[in-house]
Length: 188
Image 1 (cartoon, rainbow, N blue to C red):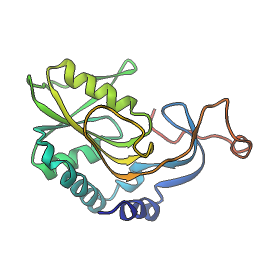
Image 2 (cartoon, rainbow, N blue to C red):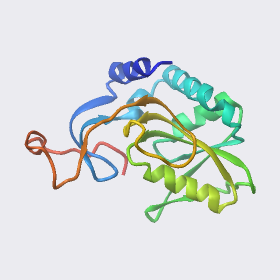
Image 3 (cartoon, rainbow, N blue to C red):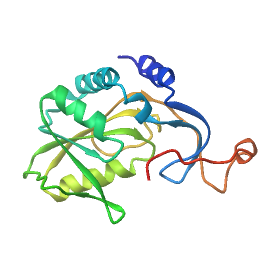
């Protein structure tokens, strides 16, 4: 699957939104990828998951781990396509934790899968959890890399879509964007 084919899926599903958005990172943007809209159709999930799995298969991960909520659907499908275990981290008192009896063995090779990465904060937090439990991070896979490769997490990174989407600090909005009321469509 090419980047333009993956981007077309977002356009066709209405998952690429235009306007004034506040991202999870606190930055503002004119574009927002609402992956949940693209990932509500299982044939689409299967296609995107297969494309990501093909790119990361050589990493040899034994487990896919995803941060909830965004990474759950695509993470589970990538794990299914790879034929490996799937686990997730979730928020507890404002930070990601490994719960529900999930365990990571010493040296276990884990692949972190996320839907959209802008600054990589949730992915880094997930990687830290894997390492704190004795696991090894084989790499990171994402559907959308909003940084266009600017985020470097120190492991192999693979995305289906890599775009440089402009982001702005709240106190540095361009005049045209400042005139539009901001919405926060992401998960809280």
